[in-house]
Image (cartoon, rainbow, N blue to C red; front, side):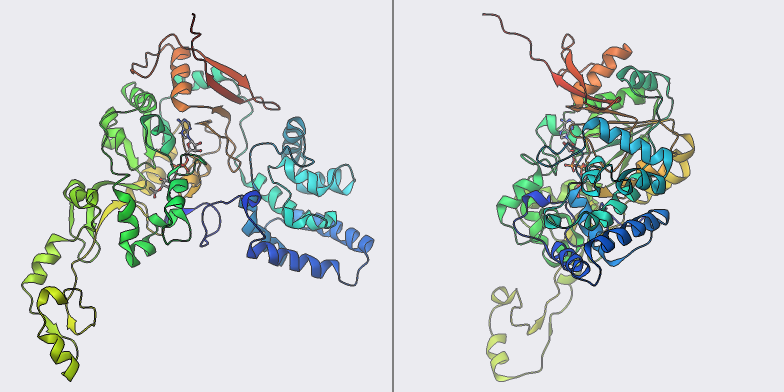
Amino acid sequence: MIPAKRPVGRPRKNWDVKGVKGVKGPQPTQVRVREVLDDQHNGHLTATQQSHSQLTELEERVNDLGDSWETESLFEDVIDDLAEEEFFHDVDACTPQERVRYRRQLRETGPANFCRATVESGSITAKKLLTAFGIRPPAFLEGFPDYSYFGLLTLALTRELAKRPKLMRYNTIDDAVDLLKTSRNIVVLTGAGISTSLGIPDFRSKENGLYNQLEKLGLEIDEPSDVFHIDVFRDRPNVFFSVAKDILPTTKVFSPTHAFIAMLQNQNKLLTNYTQNIDNIEANAGISPEKLVQCHGSFATATCQKCRYQVPGETIYPDIKAGKIPQCVKCTIALKSRPIKRKRSYNKSSSKKSRRSRSEDDDDSDGQYDIPEPGVMKPDITFFGEDLPDKFSQRLGKHDRDLVDLIVVIGTSLKVAPVSEVVGFLPAHVPQIYISREPVSHANFDIDLLGDCDVVVAELCRRAGWDLNHKMVQGNQRPSIKLAEGYQSRYYFETVKPEIRS
Ligand code: OAD
């Protein structure tokens, strides 16, 4: 069974990743890690004995990856916060070349030999080796002996080995073009990044992302993404409806990236477009409902949370736009025909109150009358804590898994499970291309094409000889493309603005 929608990592209250760098003061888990390490450090062993026994332990542990010890499980809580795909310039970090070399060496020699040849031989510290796997040495370990980093290193190695290995034969942009030209059953997995060129914000971009904007509103929630948590919705639907009017799908246009996906469909190459977007823009571009899985639902319908009555989504738009909580018409009609029951037995004060008019008493604030409320209508978008539509697992497991011959992931941070797990679920031998502004550290793609997705897909089409007919694509424009330092298959695309001659 596919589990409910949740942020990547272990289920926990604070789902969204917050960099340790930006956090003022240690977080509870970090304090606990420090305490455990303090205990170890102040124990009976001398530092040298400790270091030696820890090295043996590291070797044992990597031989048996998957084991758990207290420090390690505590580290697990913070590892997502420390993972970055960009290089660290402010710490003693591995160079891009070293990074590629260490990652390859780990896979080729296995974890035990890898540890022997690195930390155990003294050729590199565990602290520095962490950076080869995209893990920032945490500030709360600063000043501790190198063996204090072993728990984190074990996890970093586990994480790396759990990733699908990159297919070494696909590396260049032209390899990507050839794959697009020759594949017949392409799975395209999309996220909010494919709509940002239309002025719709994504969720997690630092500057303009919706969650950053929500943070400034001072809503009474722990994390901005709580706006989309089902428990919060059940308790306080007003939180969601205070922002819902700003995310209603209203536009009838589509981006060049949507046009690109529609083009794959028209060439009979599109197996399925799994979209996490709730903006319904795929329909504007002509992507057929049979080829589309709206993994996080959509505003197309809304359902009463009490009686499950479903209506077309647009019927609740007027309430949403007016900032009101939409209520179920079916419940309302049923309730009108029911007599209002007194809740408590007679007493003097309630008698006074009972003479007040109904309208004054509608909120039943003193609880004297049993006045049932109609149910709240919730747009059928999948909130955190809710199951994804059945079509997601049905299509993925029973149809696409056996047919897919290319996976193209576009404009998503892959931070929300189970959609983030799709790339690991599909057969590892199927080539994978990633197109987005920033690289991700928790999945291995064969080719990373980084930059604005509209620019990237336009260049892929140009090289393929396909006419991506869209008014936002300028036929004569060529992006500047740079190979990322230390990589053979990661490219940065930048739009070159035509020179203006005076
Ligand atoms: P995110 O905001 O997490 O990620 C969007 C990614 O697209 C980021 O990595 C951006 O850098 C990148 N991006 C933005 N504009 C781009 C552009 N023009 N070209 C290329 N890349 C661009 O959004 P999702 O991954 O879609 O759930 O988020 C997944 C889910 O988390 C959403 O479905 C949403 C949210 O909670 C809901 O509940 C509605």
